[in-house]
Structure formats: structure tokens, C-alpha cells
Amino acid sequence: MTLSSSDATQLRCWAEIDLEILRENARACSILAGGQCGLMAIVKADAYGHGLEHVVTALANEVDWFGVANVREAQRARIAAGSDVSVLILSPPTPAEIEAIVAGRFSASVSSEQEVTAFSEAAQRTGSVAKLHAVADTGMGRMGAQGNDFLKLAKAIRDTPHCTLEGLETHFPSADEDPEFTANQIDRFQHLIEQIERDSGCEIHLGNSAGLLGFHQTTPFATLARPGLALYGVSPFEEPDSTLHPALSLKSRITLIRNVPAGTSISYGRTFIADKAMTVATLGVGYGDGYPRHLSGSNTDVLIGGERCRLLGRVTMDQIMVDVTPLEKQPNCGDEVVLIGRQGEEEITACEMAEKAGTIPWEILTGITSRVVRIYHGG
Image (cartoon, rainbow, N blue to C red; front, side, top):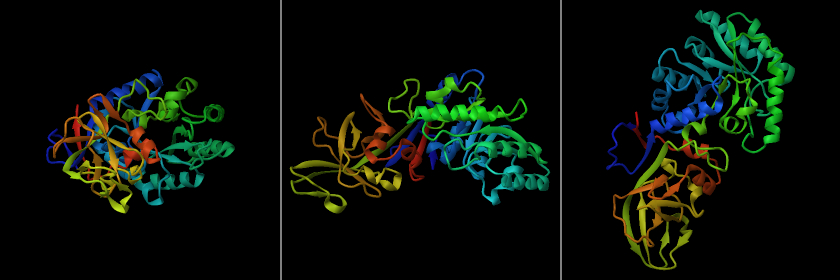
């Protein structure tokens, strides 16, 4: 569910997305990529939880391509952006998707000559051309062809009727963790593509967010960069990037405030027992909204009145409890609580939440469920 209004007074949990910040992040990514390199905005998984249709519409004039995971996402992106937009399906297609991909004039990533044959047959049946991107497996290990098999794959696309070699791609598995391996990966991919006969319009792309932020100067041969996390204002590196700003804030409300005596247990499993009298606020958010259960017992904070308040006990499906005893100004039921975002001088980032939950910011953002209403600003 989404709302265009900023009126969230009746909502227990909602996300606010600033589309102008999103566009600013896209411009920052474009500057990093360089004037000769276009952008493919990665909008899979409902645009990392930000809402695919709204994000695609906001970025339609800022980027050159959109990257998705499956044909249904491709269809949604095409409707949102218009019939001329270029959309690449990044994941291997299921056999049942192939004809819809070709008929929809979407581009597909392929790893084998068998896939090329299947696309050719579908293109012949539909009277279309299959637009294919050959994937080189240079270290990711989840799809693509290695070494000489990649060269054969590119040639097969070129030589197969009803198919066109539209792009050459690979993917970084550890650009945010292993610069030496990544540099070697870039060299190997460049050596491979230099051996391939291709048209001048053939796209070459390998730079995800970490690749773009950390290695853009070493990939001048690329024609596209593929920012995902960076586009939404989050750096994959430990140090935040000052040119990027989070586009999403996650918020909730206080639904109940109680004074409890020492010895009171809080939430399932009685993992927290008050050692003194406390004021406890119940919030209308839980793992049913995508607030991770693994935040339980991990010194997690929320923001109330611009101050940090500690999560107490286990996260439940629909509610969490926090300690508001130390607050100088006691809150009221209905007050806004920030789970991700800024309030006053304090800020909780998706990266902080991910660290406390023992996961990654990608999972935090994509895990925000459909029960959470999205409210858009800057459209």
C-alpha cells in the first residue's frame, strides 16, 4: 500500500521516501561513473523496498536503463517508465519466462548456449528479436560462463538467428571486501571482452554500488554502471559516502505507555526482566513489518523526541517495547518514533540496524513488508 499524502496520523508503521533525494543520488552516481558511462538503476525487490513504480517514475529522466530480477518486475518497470525504456532482467530466466521476455522487448542475461537457443526459438515464434547480454562468471559463481566458454557464448549469440548481442556483463562478489581480487577480476573481464567481436552499441557493464564507488576509475571500458544500494543513499563500505543520502526513513508510533515495577518481564521468553521501576513504551511495529527479530537483545535503539531509547526484550510480530524512563520529556501515545532515519541531532541508519541484527543493509531495506505504508515526498 502507498500514499501520496504526508498525513500519517492513523498509521502505526510507515516508510517515507524522498524522491528528490533519490534523484540526487542518481546524479552523484552518474558523476562518479563519468561522462561516457550511463546508469542502470537497479530496481529489483520492489526497488529495495522503496516502491518500484514510484522509483522508476522518479528516475525515468535520470538513468538510461533499469535492472530487475524477473519478467514481472520488468513489466511493472515498463508500465511506470514508458514503452521506450530499456529494461534488463539480471537473473537467469525460467523456461516459462522466455517467451514473455522476448515478446515484451526486454533484455535478458544469459549464461549458456542452451538459453540462447531457447530465446531464438521464442523470438521466431513471436516475430521478435531476442536482446541478450552474455554473462561472464569471473568470480561470483551464481551464473555466467567462464573463460573460453564465455567467448563461445558471445559468439553463439552473434551467430544465432533472431538474437542480438546487446551486452557483455559480469558481477563483483566482493568489491567492498577484497580489492585485490576485484582488481584481478576487472583485468580478466577486460581481457575477455577485448577478444569478442561486437557492434559499437554493445553495452559493457560490471560495476555494482561497491564497484562504482571503489573502482570506477579502473573500468573506463564500461558503458554502464549498475548502482543499487548507492542509488538509495547507502554505501556498501563501512565509511559512509558524503555524496549519498538515504532516501528512506522508517517510522512508527507509541501505542501504549506503562509504568512497571522492578521484576516485570518484557516480551516472549522473559529475556528481559526490569531490575528497577521503569516507564515502558509499546510501539506499533514488529517483524511482521520487517523490523528484524534478530535485533532482540542486541542493544538496539529507536529515536523518540530526538533521543535514543533502548529496545527491551524480544521483537514480536506486531509490537516492540522500549525504555523511555531516561527521557527528559516524557512522551505521549501517538508520538512519532524513528526506526531508520534522523530525528533532531540523532540518526539511525540502515547500516547500524543491519550490524545490530547481524545482517546487511540490503536485507534490512528489502525486508520492509507490504504492510508498511509508503509515503512519498519530492515527486
